[in-house]
Image (cartoon, rainbow, N blue to C red; front, top):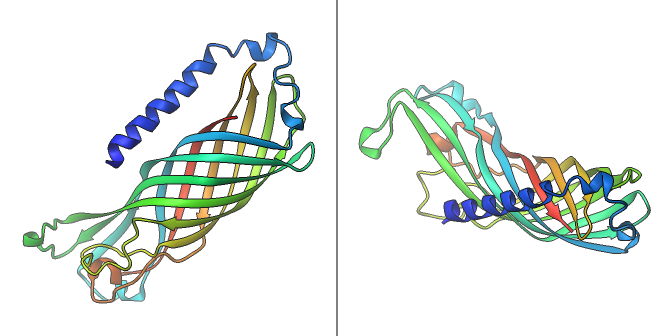
Length: 244
């Protein structure tokens, strides 16, 4: 299901990108587009994007005293995000932004090198444990914008984000073969973007990074996949397109 939804959103991103490409000459030669856009108190927009995420983790001291797991690595994975933007104009250069509806679909994984794999349980010398996430986020950002140059403006953002993972499995009793994660997380994030002013809308490509501050790991000392890891933090870099 996540795979099909991911394909549909990727197609939407390509369509949103292809349309404005045909009219980019208007940014320079078509006059000043939407001259009153930045003076409005509120802006609304739809945001579609792709993300690259992984776990940053630390080994538990037990890792050095056992011989069943020799190497643990976090694997990067690609996901998608869909959000609704609300922007409050504070001054000519500062805005307050949030996303009341912000869904992120991602799949992170750990790869284990096992000294004594349990073949009947489906383990091999290299065993991958995947963790799927469907995250509902509430970011709060301050945006600082440059002066507008014709139909182009550059901006940077910084803020905090609160996440609720609807697919987290820390409370599941039948997930003993997986790494259990807590549902709540909070992060700091920053990024850079560009506003391209077209005759009827503003297109904003944006690159953003996010650092999770909360320990997501619900450690189980009786499981080799969980007991050798102490702390897990989320990391994400995303590219998105916003249409206002």
